[in-house]
Length: 400
Image (cartoon, rainbow, N blue to C red; front, top):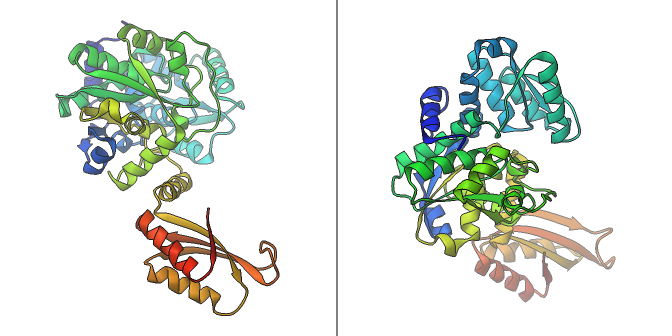
């Protein structure tokens, strides 16, 4: 095994004071929704908002004097970039981060603010990685891999040490899988420290690279996903080897479950998670029978979600739960109709939050208008009552 429990413990001592020792919490709303006792490890509270600091801090602390003088380089479009940038700056080491051209400006700016020089290159992550390796060779820089490195794997494993300290009596641990560094490090800790604890990885439906590698199948991934932090094609060879040796099972979750998990964490646990950071909770929602009544730990391993995307997720979840009612009505184009509709909605307890009234183009007749309402409700029963109240006024109502 390329990494041992001793390596992880050494990493924990090495990064102490540089990386936050994050809290683990249990939340009644999350427990109820998942049907299990869920320990949430809040690594979204790290300085960069993600667990990646652990591995980066450990790897950078092991640089030789010559490597520190020459500087380091990394490739990332997300959290690893900021982790390397921050901890290089803390050590006084020059850092270059190669990011694909499509990287959002906010991530570029945050990485630069942590003190790194950012190079935008390539249309894909693979092209950016190739350029980073080329610069490393040309300039004598040390490449800091995001997951296929024993020091990085050991650093990520420190999360499991903390989880076991907070909850010695666990039945299972669920860990999001991108390149595999975190699940590999934590699985090693569990195998040596708590061999009775079952460790699971979790991938999102469109990106099951680790599941495919472990099954010996060709890797085929792609498509849009809210869990971009674990949307990986090329997983690490060391993590693959470790997971195979330890017999780790990787679960798959659909996009919808990730969205539901994000909303549950915001509303229930009052904590913000990016898609990848909510994947463990998504697995609990997807496989309730498998973990029913068990004591399960999972990290909220990242909280760097775009505010607009978070808003969309929350609104979509309200629609699915029946707490947001969207109605279309074809109404007569005469005075007092809008007031009558508003009165009926209010009398049933609904709160109108958005109105679209179209006379000219959308209505089927010049004597009618199309009205679209977005109404906040308590539950589906109240939504049904509002529709009934409108239909009692002889309005034709369509939900949509």
